Length: 202
Image 1 (cartoon, rainbow, N blue to C red):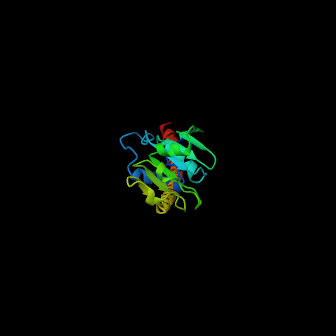
Image 2: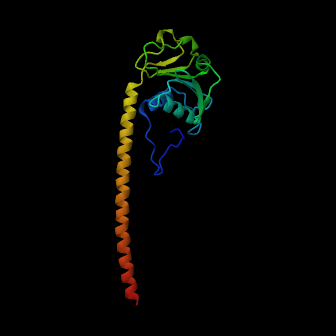
Image 3: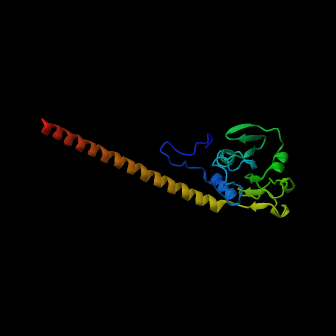
């Protein structure tokens, strides 16, 4: 994920963290992905701010969005970084400046005390709250802002998706192993037939 490798050596898609994937699917459904662009570039020109840099949600989400072409500001308690295609560097902008530029704002601060200033969020932006507490006053947002108050049900759906992918990958592995085993028997049988054929030609 951090190196933007989308499939395994066997060609299977990687399993991704459920909540970050839920946010990506939500943002996609809201029309921010440009399907006319190639995969990995469908968020070209989009700026996002993720207020959370945990290893479970914020950091993987920033990587997923950056790998799809977005410029992503990753905000934590005491720092702000900008991420572009897996390259993370300290940002020159403040949190307010980053949010004011952002088409996507993801809020994931696990505290009832944190509230983002709704005036920072630009008109028409998408705001996704992934925290158990509301990190912004929904009523104070501009009516043009698309606000998603929670992604829990989508997260559960992504968990189910991951389980199904793992199940299918396991079945494919068993099928490959059986095919290799069958090939060994076929190869052995072919060798016996070849030896017999050569013996008959003498």
